[in-house]
Image (cartoon, rainbow, N blue to C red; front, side, top):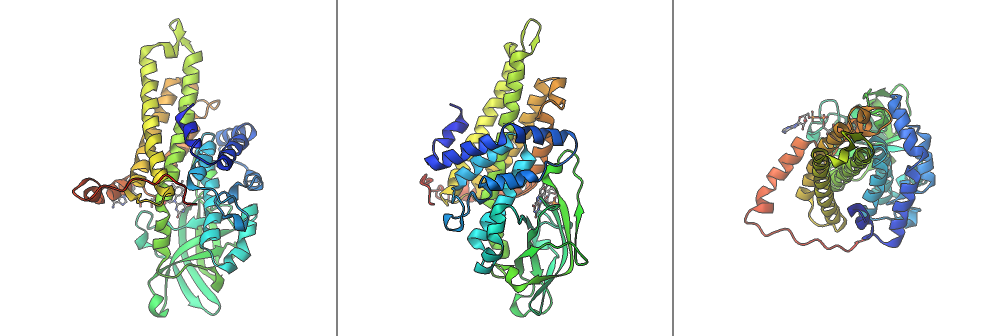
Length: 404
Ligand SMILES: Cc1cc2nc3c(=O)[nH]c(=O)nc-3n(C[C@H](O)[C@H](O)[C@H](O)COP(=O)(O)OP(=O)(O)OC[C@H]3O[C@@H](n4cnc5c(N)ncnc54)[C@H](O)[C@@H]3O)c2cc1C
C-alpha cells in the first residue's frame, strides 16, 4: 500500500468512496483529453466542468443541508490530488470553482445563497476569487480597485489580474477598496460577489499562458460597473481578514496537488526505466539511474508527509500558519525539481507529446505563484521563527479527529 493510500485509510468510509469515485472520473477519457488539448495548445473542454458538477464534486465541501457532501478538508485534498495526477492546471482550476461554491455556502448571505448556490452546485454559475491586480499580487494592501456607493448598490472600477477561470466564469468574488466619502467605511477593503455580464462597464482580457491554457487566466476589467446591494460579501473591513483566514488551507491544497503531480511523474519515469533497455539491461538496473529515481522518491515522500501533517493541522483547526507555508514552499520546490529529474531520466521520450511530464512541469510551475510565492512563504516562515523554534512553548499536538 502506498503512503498516499494509507492517507485514504484515515478518511471515513463515505469519503474514501468519494476519493475512489473522483479517481474513476479522472482516469481514461478525461485524462487523455487533458493531455491531447495541452499538446494542441488549448484548454480542456469546459463541458467537463458540467460532468464534474453532475457527479456532485462541485459540492464536495458544501454542507449537506444545502445539497453538498459536507466533506472534510482531508477528503478535499485527496480528491484534488486524484485529478492533479492527470493534469495540474485542470485540477487547480476545477478545485478553484469548487472553493467558490463552498465559500458562498458557508459565508454567503441568505440572498446570495438563494440567488446563486443551487446554480453553482450544478455548474451553471461558475465563480472565481479575484484579488490580484496588475499593480499588486503579493502586496494586496496596494490594491486600487474601488467600490463607490450609489443608489441601490455600488459602482466598481478597477482591474483584477491572473484570474483562474477568468475566461469563463459568470461571477467573481472581487476584493475592492470602498471609495468616495462613504462614512466610516471609506478606505476599507470589502468583498463583492459580482455577476459578470460583458458589456460597456465590464470586459475580460485573456492572458495567454503558453503551455498552461487550462488555467484560463484573464484580466477582469471594470469601469463604473453596477453591483447590487445584495452582492456585498461579509462586512466591509473584514474582507481581507476573511480571505486570509482560508489561506493556510489554500496553501496546503496547492502543495498537495504538487505532490500528486510529482508522484505521477515518478510513476511514468519508473515504468519507463523498467521497460527501456540500455547496455544490455533495463535502465533501472543501472545503479546511477536507480539512485537518481530513489532520490526523487524519498523527497516525494518527505513532501507528502509534511503536506499531510499540515493538512491534518488545517483539518483540526490547529495553528497552521508556519506549517502551511513550509508545506507549500517545500512541495513546490521538490515537485519542480522532481518532475524535471523524471523528465531527464526518460531521455528524449520524456519530453515528447506521448508523455505527461512536459505538461506537468509547465503547469505545476505556474501553480506555484498562487496563494503565496516562495519568497512570501519564506518571509512568513521567517517571521514565525522565534515563536515556532525559539523559547516560546512548542506548538500543541494536532487533534486528529475530524471536527466536522
Ligand atoms: C496560474 C495562476 C493562477 C492564479 N489565480 C489567481 C486567482 O484566481 N485569483 C487571484 O486573485 N489571483 C490569482 N493569481 C495571482 C497570484 O495570486 C499572484 O501571481 C501572486 O499573488 C503573486 O503576485 P504577482 O504575480 O503580481 O507577483 P509580485 O507580487 O509582483 O511578485 C514578483 C516577485 O517578487 C517577489 N516579491 C514580492 N514581494 C516581495 C518581498 N516583500 N520580498 C521578497 N520578494 C518579494 C515575489 O515572490 C515574486 O517572485 C494567479 C496566478 C497564477 C500564476
